[in-house]
Image (tube, rainbow, N blue to C red; front, top):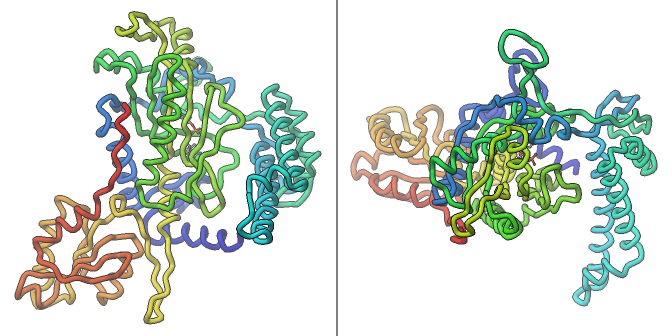
Length: 514
Ligand code: GAP
């Protein structure tokens, strides 16, 4: 763990040093859990958004996009349940004065028991060798079974208490499990309280209650309230989807882990409207499809896993996360939720406007059911960046830091470098740059020795460096250096563009079930 913490710190400082992510308003000592994206960060972020948009909207004839406003009529959030139920149970440690989410404390405790089980299983696997059956061991070994029963007990008690709103019992459980404050090590806890995560502000000149509006905590509601506008104006037939990328805001109390949990962040959401009764089929479809999308980025599939929710959000009848193995463990990257007709039904009730679809095949009207895919841009950014960050020892004994970002997402696709700053090499390099820059985000660099310039490009994840040397002037060839292998090839100038284009291609195509 210490090593992972070290690594995580390195990734954060690399992100700052190389213009990916800066703390917000840093000259005023920053604002907790708010970050700005720098010159390379914004390119990576835009590429992530484009890759998602292409796969969801461009590749699906029955998914269209919208861009709804951040501010919405305040009744939206009454109808969606966020005013009453978008809460986190919080507990303070009286000694360290630190505030924690009670669910995180309990889930961390469960994770520790799970680690113990994994250790037992690993030990047994080594002891029994080839004849070892993990499934049998997990269901028969007394110690493992005892741990598993403990986990089941904690989950039933904890989620039961939350369900009933019995916060005193949540505190009693924390005490019973002897959970200590990670900072002070003490068990001196306050009562557990619910804390609403929405930011509010006021609209107009008066700050009366009636003028209170919220900064949206999810983009999804902008889609729900526009459901009929899009369906009618686009003559969409069920099943169909509406996609959106945009900012969301949550007053996260325990905001930590860099851009993993922010107060202002971006979501990429898609609501898929289906016939009532068909939602589980589509829920399974989107679970599988979204996992395929993640795998298409070329990151090891072992870094991803599903986690089915034990406690469902107030709007869901089934929910799973796609988790990614960050430096601080497996954590949620994307949520896939079967939201039933909860949102449309409630908006219909609160607004008094019908939000129904007439199904010509069935010859009946109904409120559609919804399956949602919801992924954070910033968490995807962190997953890509963390996975890409590599420290390498080279054969000549030197070291380099390289970001092995999937080429399609890399901020800069190619750097054009004159070997030296004279003999007409810069002019020739500029010519090449001018030809490429309309198609790809490129960078021209003539400062410092060529080796240092290669290192700078490695550190920001540029897939190709194109070097112009004296031979270029004679035969119109350049060397092209590939980021990961550092292999250099001599190619004709006219080949550059197609080589880059080939590297940016991905295999991803959604399954044609839609
Ligand atoms: N509309 C459903 C919804 O908002 P969620 O699981 O609360 O569901 C979806 O959020 C995704 O948004 C998460 O999987 C995560 O990637 C991202 N996300 C949520 N809260 C975040 C935060 N405070 N900072 C960064 N990303 C966040």
